[in-house]
Length: 433
Ligand SMILES: [Zn+2]
Image (cartoon, rainbow, N blue to C red):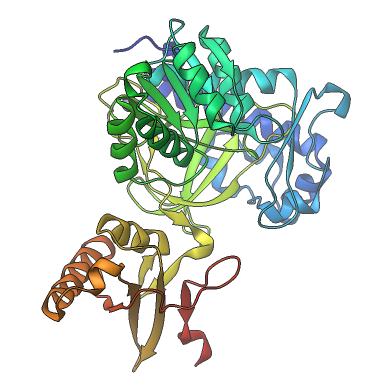
């Protein structure tokens, strides 16, 4: 077992974890009921009193919170402490509507940084490391979160922030950074730049944490190979604290959720019913130690699976899979949950460009999923028999990923209409019948 940042908690028995969660959940519910008018009204509408929530077994009784609720209460309506007790504000990017702001007390900042410190230690980091943080600093939680975590570990922290690749590379070489924190796409870009400039021999990186956007296993292998490091995933969201809500360990197979701070549930996004381990659904978090902005049953819209199976690293915290998509994007085809991101992963894996369109129709009460995929120029020049073999291979890969038959049509490059802004990937004609 490694050198844990807080091994006493991370390796507590399941009984100890539950006892801790029961106690802190009951306290948090009471505090939120007393201090947050908006949530008290929600509880009253649901006919729930704080005394009804005695342990995590009662969690399912509490009403959900969504991003919509946070927008309704913007900016300070969800605060559970006086504003004068807060020391920091962070904010979401607001790409899907009004921004959400989250307030932190000093204790909230500390617990968040502890979570990031655990992530760094789980990725092999220690006080011997020189940690180059090239996430953006500012309202975005990426930069300051990993920055604070790196301090807690006692590592030498380089607060580079994002961009300015020339300077990033110069410092990486001159100061001999050993640990990199940034988005996976920026890590891939840095790797490319390092190789183009022939700097590979001059860098000393050995590990890194990459998150804040979706990335595939292929991309992980690519980054690891090109930079000569081990690449670890991290998960988090501003509403819950920031990066570090969950983190990958040396097994690199799912992320441990910091359960002493956050209770995780997976629910059926349609019915709200809680699902058991191993079943795919929407991830819901309840924060039980935060002071300023404790959210109860917050729906993340991220789809994943939880597992309590024993992990080889020794940690006992539940693990979540990498998010497989957003509940907003979920399609139900022939009774099966399908996400565009799953289809995209199969396409990327087989070298197709991300230009595709999904059409769902219904004939005689049976759903049909059709997929138009653009070929690359090279594929397009292949003989017809090869194109047909490619289609068969893709159909089979999609069947094993989704569990249903997909009618695949390979089409010529640039034949799928481009839209300005967000691409229209899914046309569900069933809604028109
Ligand atoms: Zn583990």
